[in-house]
Length: 30
Image 1 (cartoon, rainbow, N blue to C red):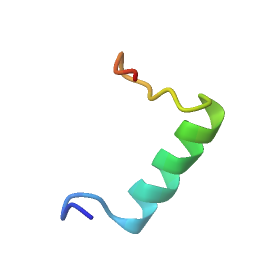
Image 2: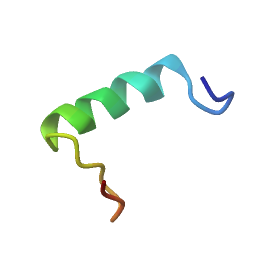
Image 3: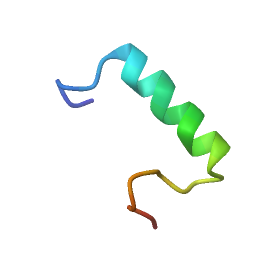
């Protein structure tokens, strides 16, 4: 994984992805 992502960041990202049902916050979507 990228150097700038810590374990805590990855956990937060996975929570955001769960909560957003695959949509990421910050105006970026897939």
